[in-house]
Amino acid sequence: FFSATAKTDLTGKKILITAGPTQEAIDPVRYIGNRSSGKMGYTLAAECRNRGADVVLILGPAPEILKEDLSGMTVIKVTSAEEMYNACINHFSTTDIALMAAAVADYRPEQVSTEKIKKEKGAPELHLVKTKDILARLGHLKTDRQIVLGFALETHNEASNALEKLRKKNADYIVMNSLNDGAAFGADTNKITIYSKDGAQFPFESKPKTAVARDIIDTILKTGFPAI
Ligand code: CTP
Ligand code: CA
Image 1: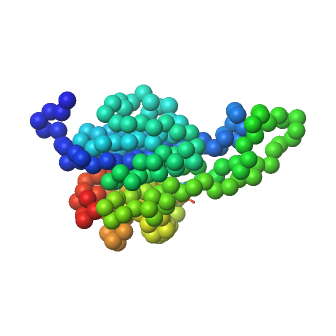
Image 2: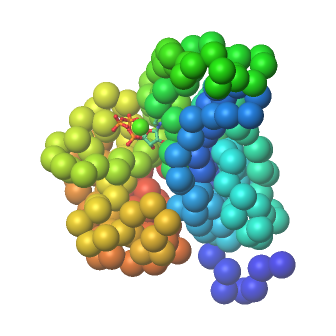
Image 3: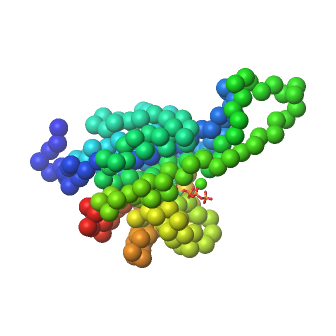
């Protein structure tokens, strides 16, 4: 139930969120992946649910997140970037706001061995190909009634790289995570700057992920007009 003071400013909005890593199979027992915990995406999903939204969380393999409170949201578990892409495409036409917090693998093995690769054969040559860019696809599919937001973790030329991603992927917002004060993968706090497509920049102090999620949603609601 919701108390009389619960915020419901997202009631009626469908919000699509990607979270966690993806795993790209090499053979039946091995994959290429990354260390994303899925925490930022889950925290966004919980914030949106608590404010009344209809939340669809597309979740890569993130075991810690499965222990969280997933009630009141639709969770679609996926493994690979391709599965995450397909789940997003299935839901996007009815989505109002897409928040792409997943750490999608950038490359996958072109061929997946159906049998476990044996070391007697020597080290395999993995031929990698790029995965589909989900954010860029949704950015180019969106209508002027939809908002698409992505993240960027940069180690150098932060602002120019974030702005380049905003432009190339046709996103409405890019949330840049600063590594400057030690906030990064697995950390409990984040220092973000939000860049919007109309050239505005919103810098925030380092704060817990729950407060970061609130800042992101508040910024969209304040500045996303007329789409929202
Ligand atoms: N993203 C995505 N699909 C991909 C790769 C990235 O949807 N195949 C999204 C991420 O969820 C994030 C944004 O794009 O919201 C930026 O991801 P990032 O890894 O910072 O950028 P890339 O475009 O992958 O470029 P690079 O890793 O080379 O910096
Ligand atoms: Ca990447």
